[in-house]
Length: 384
Image (cartoon, rainbow, N blue to C red; front, side, top):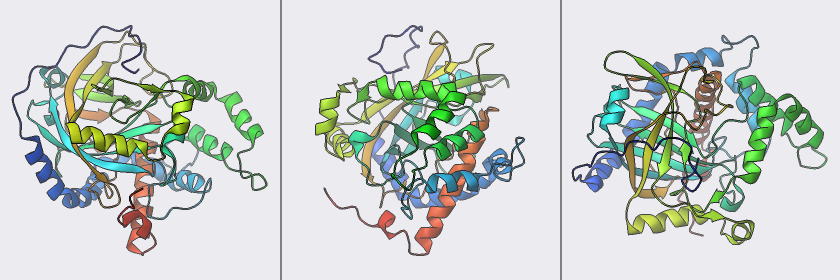
């Protein structure tokens, strides 16, 4: 839910005041060691995503659907862009800090909630496989974050502007991808194929309705980003709570109408972000929603009631942005199963599938870059 919409849930507890902190110094240190973190992250993927690799191998679920098959289907739906991510290909790198609250520390022993500032490396993006896509035609916007350094406390997350997924299982996602495949005769998806998919997946129809009716924000900085999948927070006593979380912006939301979107520049999101950062830092509160008994914790296509308890677990502050082609986020796989002590995955099958597909996409684009086929993804980006 965006800040501009009415709220039916109790207001989260406000974060405690924070002492001054040298954010620029922390960012400089983070950027200096960014390359090391990227390579260290490859090892972290191997250590932290056993369930994802089990899914990749087809060991989980009754149908042998693997990550290579999922990514192959995505690649078949459009022209190739070697060296780029297979989805959310267009984006920018960002950096900043995160400071947790006492309320967050009460829910999880993760060190990011200690109250000390933690360096953050991140990425904003738009949905779709085209690294040159127009911002004013992209419905989905995303925030990916890496908290901390290359050790057991590192936490990566991938959040999206939509409040729920269109589907509940990897198999349904694959079917949806196939239904979107362009007809060679028209270059467009077959409406009958998509309608057939929607007829058997009512939640996907609800997602399409959200995409048609939800307000469009005019900035990455005033968009709310949602984890969508559920995770487990583990406190100091070993007790677990199933949660979802959102990054809720401090900046006011200004919806774009159809006429404004039509006039907007193809790269207006990056330009707006640079303008805002030139004037000061931008902020989001990490708002954790606690599941109640009976909530669909393993189905990301079903939102939880708006009356669930919410806690402000910390504040994200971003102070720097740079092009992704030469930025520190380019070579990071923002795998949502790279988790610190105090946070664990739920049994949501989409979560393991996302992790496996991200790994497959990462390996493919890194191979393309190494073989010299991904130069467009690593070259200095032209000024438009």
